[in-house]
Length: 222
Picture 1: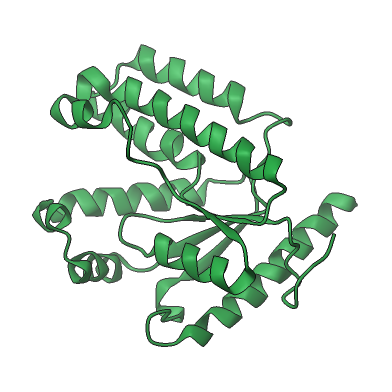
Picture 2: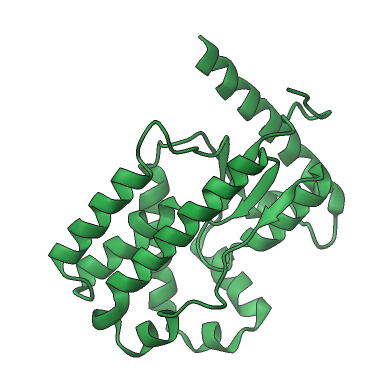
C-alpha cells in the first residue's frame, strides 16, 4: 500500500472526535485537503426522529439512537468498501459511550431500552468483522477553551444553552476517551494549532498521524 510523505497510507481511515464546539469539522476538512482524502460528515437532513426527539426525549431517545447507529454503521461500511482514504467527522462509538449512556442515567431512556440498544451496538460494531478506523484523533482542551470557541462561533441555540450542559458534555467526553481502546487514539490539544490563521500548523499533526498509524500497523504485524 502506498503511503504519502507523512507515512500515512492512502487507504487510511481517520475519525475525528471531541465535544461540541471543539473544531471537529474544521479539522476534518483541513486533514482531508492536506491528504487528498474524502470526508464523511454526520447526516442530519432526513432524520425522521430528530424533531420529535427534541419535543419528547423520553418517547423518542431510543428510536433516535437506533437510527443513528444504523446510519453510522452503513456509512462505516461504505467508507471501507470504497477502499478507505477518508476523514470522518464524529465516530460511531460516541453515541453509545456518551449519549445513550447519558439518556439512561438521566431517565430519558429506560434501562430495558438502553440494554437493547447496547446489545445491538455490541453485536454490530464490537466484533472482529466490523472495520474500525486506523486512528481516532481526539481534540481536547480546557473547558474554558471549549466554551470560548462555542461563544465565538455565535450559534444562537448554543448561546441559549446553559453553561452547565456544556460542562456536563465536556466531562462525559473526557470520561469516555479515558476509557476508549477500540482503535488507536491520538490526542491533539486545540491550542497547539490555528487552522484559520496558520495553515502550516497542520503539518506537525500530519507527522504525528503518520507515526501513530505506522506504529499501530507494525504492531498488528507482530
